[in-house]
Amino acid sequence: MVQLSKILHSRDNWKRTTIECRYEIRELKKTKQRHLKKIAELKLENRELKHQALEVKKTQL
Image (tube, rainbow, N blue to C red):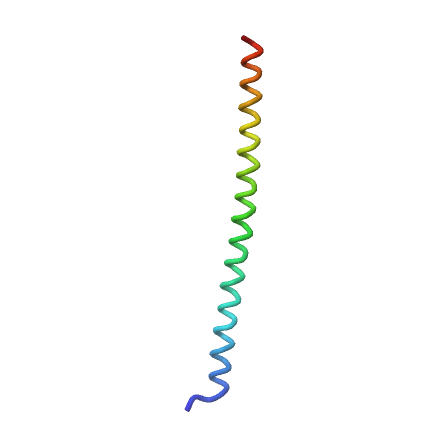
C-alpha cells in the first residue's frame, strides 16, 4: 500500500505545478489585454492622423 507521505508529496507536487501553470496563463491573459488595448489606441491614433492628413490635403487644393 502506498504510504500517506508519498500520496501527500504527489498531491503537493501536482498542486504546485497547477498553481504555476495557472499563474502563467493569468499573466499571458494580462499581457494579451495590454497589447490589445495598445493596438486599439494605435489604430485610433492612426485613424485620426489619416483624417488630419485628408483635411490638410483638402485645404491645400
